[in-house]
Image (cartoon, rainbow, N blue to C red):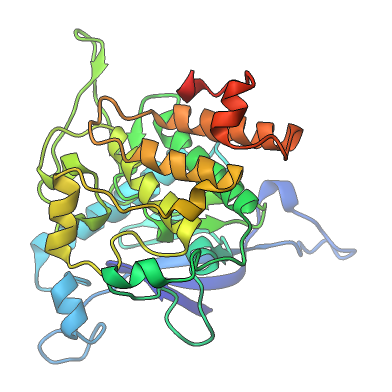
Length: 353
């Protein structure tokens, strides 16, 4: 096995050649099956007990972020077990979609899921050798940065990446038995699988929305105040009624990182960034990103996702269609000019028509 990394409350390990799927079972001349899939084994992490004999060491970051759990804290333990259950159940529901990682097994505090080898966050953020993958700068530094920070990715490829990410969210919002909200859309949740498709891998904060048959509409819910509101929609930061539209706002943050190579609100303090979001302020998008069609479309998609009023915010399906139309337009006519020029020539973009 190989240690892959740690999240909020789980550790992930790569287990090689563990699971044999029905569609890739093969036998050699002796009849022994020899085609197996690598999988990810996720298990809950916990803090050391008072004797320091079990679990993982508690440091300042662990304490400040609330990572791990104390085995003597049954309330927190049961809450994290519930997160594990939600994650596995939602993954199972989304099995028909290639835009969600498959789950093979789940029990209590552990699960076995599909191995998705390419971390999109690692690909999108420049690493510059051995430095951290996120480049930390102060806000006043941004006008002087040589943007984009991830120029190793063409704007055309960035547009393709954004479309794949939007399709991941659409798979949840368009689930056949009702809307499922991810509630935790961020760059680190997207990986590319062995099938070549970008997919979501984490669903532990997901919410299946209830439907009011009398009003013929989905019911909103409240989640309480987020401890870190920098990646959240305005409505989440004021504990308002929530809908699937919060995922669309958060997807705009992800698109921003894909476009620029920088993390949204990087260099801002938690309180300042959260206050800006509540007041309707968004990160500025440099004018250089409006100079080519592909980058302009992605910048426009970000602004659309960041629409303040959730009721006015485009749906994920509208975002998908907008990106699809842009890619189709660029394929037909790569020299067709800016979005405005293409609209003037009669091209159709549903969100602008």
